[in-house]
Image (cartoon, rainbow, N blue to C red; front, side, top):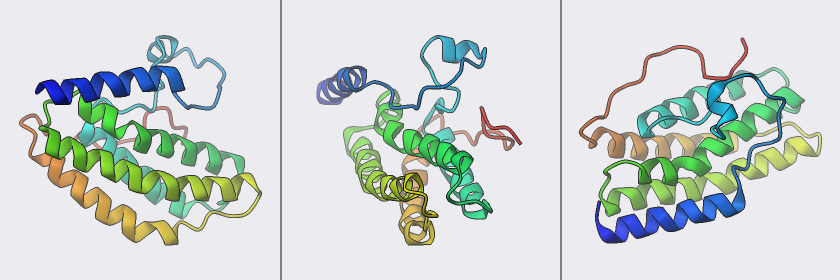
Length: 165
């Protein structure tokens, strides 16, 4: 890792610690990773994060109650993942230029998703169509970055960690 990249990663880690995880408080699930401060929906790597964002968005679009409490919880988890993207990328061997792409992607998506979350908090349904084209374009950028990593492996298909069918 380059010294600049390491400095950025350390600085962001400190900011993350100061700001906290950003997850809504939950009842303990008994999940060992959650007991150690790692939420069950935190992806292990950039490829997993991309897959989770894509799956979660598709599920939210199909949700019959886009203003309900379960929808809000799932949207918040997706926002968490988008916010974690730079940290997840910082834990890899990405060159600084590619890390910047990931960081910018996170910065683009977070406000749009937060706006939708605010709508749901006010009792209005989310309008995910307004986010869809930017999200798809951003995911394409992120896939390109992830595919350039030496260990870019597609995670197995299946349920989202921590999700209840």
